[in-house]
Length: 91
Image: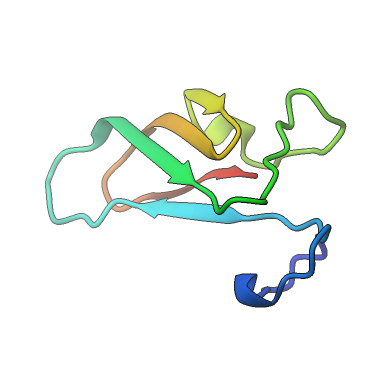
């Protein structure tokens, strides 16, 4: 929660943390990604906090067009311009 890197293999049970995924356009294609879908599946035992239903602030709400959070996965739909990067979301 403090922004420091963690080793997922050494997380104690009950530890709160933020997982952030950054999506990059490789710039090898001359077109933007207009309909990019990202599906993040998380290990059993990790609980995903939905920032729309808690008081935890997410810094990347505008980074995606659609978000669907389930028990063990988070799905995002987003647009990505050439040579740009976005955080898909924090869970």
